[in-house]
Amino acid sequence: DAKTTQPTSMDCAEGRAANLPCNHSTISGNEYVYWYRQIHSQGPQYIIHGLKNNETNEMASLIITEDRKSSTLILPHATLRDTAVYYCIVRVAGDYKLSFGAGTTVTVRA
Amino acid sequence: NAGVMQNPRHLVRRRGQEARLRCSPMKGHSHVYWYRQLPEEGLKFMVYLQKENIIDESGMPKERFSAEFPKEGPSILRIQQVVRGDSAAYFCASSPPMETQYFGPGTRLLVL
Image 1 (cartoon, one colour):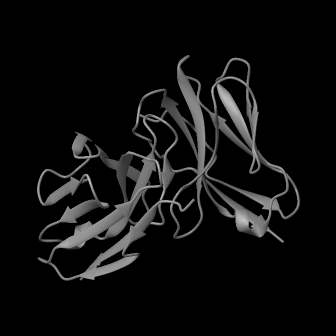
Image 2 (tube, helix red, strand yellow):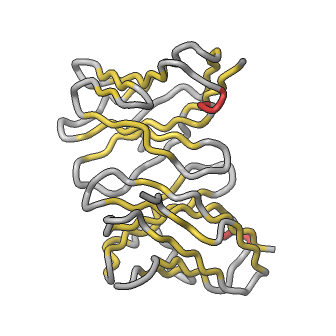
């Protein structure tokens, strides 16, 4: 049962911002939005998470709509090393199982 | 602060042999999770352990697979009598209780 919907793939120009959308229209009030990415042949890397407020850290920003039914991960200045599969995951607080879907394959081009 | 460590990074086994995969959690993390990624598929949860306890092994195949997290030492995922279908990348994650999981680099198992 897919809790999130992401585009299959997207391209981004190096140095530009990459905006990755995620739909989670059935999200509950106690569910967080998590983002991970997996660079080829590596383990998933935690990026950011949020509940209802926008969040920013050294890697990215997370914008969550007011109704919480969708969110956008923003990589402010994409580099070639940001080429990866990006996973948007909805997780109930206290739930330990992460459900990875197909994610979005992001290709950053020079 | 070292991240989650897994070894070996690559493991080749012949059908019928045993595979042992090790995971050392991040310092201060008492919870360990194992996930499996079959070729061209997403990661699937296998098992969740705390020190000396298996909390949830609902994602583990019923036979040949076992996991432990002893009081001392790394967590071990053990696969007995491996078959070709066990070829996959096995990832370990660790966290403090109910917090963000951080993943290791994975062990790639190839069964010949």
